[in-house]
Length: 380
Length: 84
Picture 1 (spheres, rainbow over the protein chains, first blue to last red):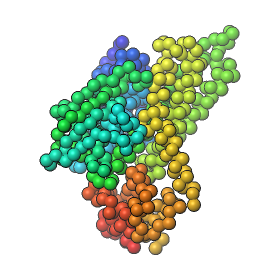
Picture 2: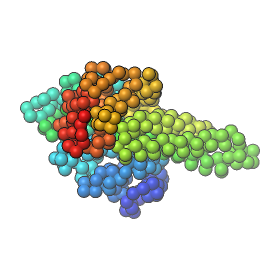
Picture 3: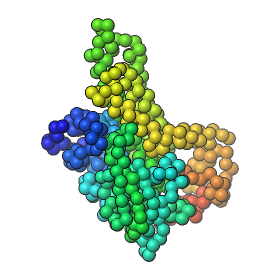
Picture 4: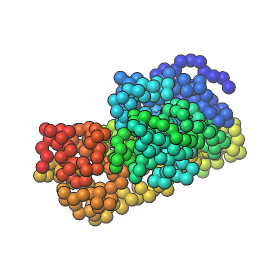
């Protein structure tokens, strides 16, 4: 693998994100997938481009980027490599939560490092016995002196092998609280999870917390009944990023399939002239545009502070992730045996797309939530 | 009182739960339909509609039980807004 050494330009919009991804990510994404990790070199390039948390305020080292643009940037990253996009997603969730709910002291301590990528964040919610069913988590944080004592096991933590700061959700009596836990706090153990179906380079881990003593400033956000809002807001942003990444997968499937169909010949004619192939490509074009619009609408509502962004994001993620899985399967089909080989990116896209239907709320949970709101709003 | 904070909050809750018959003094938590998602939407609605930021220490259940208590919270955070 040839590592790039050129310092990247700052990513400020879709165009610069696309240029960054085409130069620093796309040529190497299959290698990352095979090696099971995103290399440190790329993590540094991401930092140099200001990509880790550009939505943070300028005074914290961010760029004050609006969330519509952030969605476009995450789409472009997802087009190149879902594993890198996954690392960006969980880091975004941590950085946004610190910004939204942190005290001035917590923000001062963590935001500059999160903006610079000097501290990488990871989101710890799922457990061996609790995934989308967040009410079933068993990790506990009990008051201990003037701080907290954390015990439990988190699983499927994206970026867990590499992250410096964990945002851990734990039971605090009847409620769920969010805690900032440095990786090297005594009692924290990280066990890598490798050889996953998709997003294989996202450095998943199982993380155990055994009598981890935390100070009072570890608790992020309000306690009591509204503590669940921290989780709701964090997942909302994660869902937004996954929706963006899913749009990127559809776009990657389209670009790979269109290029392949233009050059591959069947019966002396390009595959692209076959009506059944044209039908698949046209559906990719249509769904990419539709998913992009749903994402942009969710982002616009976020930037406006509208509460309806939460449902708009559920809908965007549901649509985009199912479209990604559907079109990744068709992209493999268009490529035939080549699509099942390591010589083309569509096999990776196919495996990564399946993951999008599961993370940040399985699609079954999404359909229940979307239908539930429709039922409430139309029942009189 | 159609443009008062109380009425605007009631309109928002009724818009989300048309089947619920509530007035400004009714405890919406006692009705059983408030979950963390709706709580987040409520907070976002109040902040956006009235141009306030609710600090963590004000995110207490008693401030969100009724349209009246939410309007009172708005009044404390933005004294220029009349609370009816």
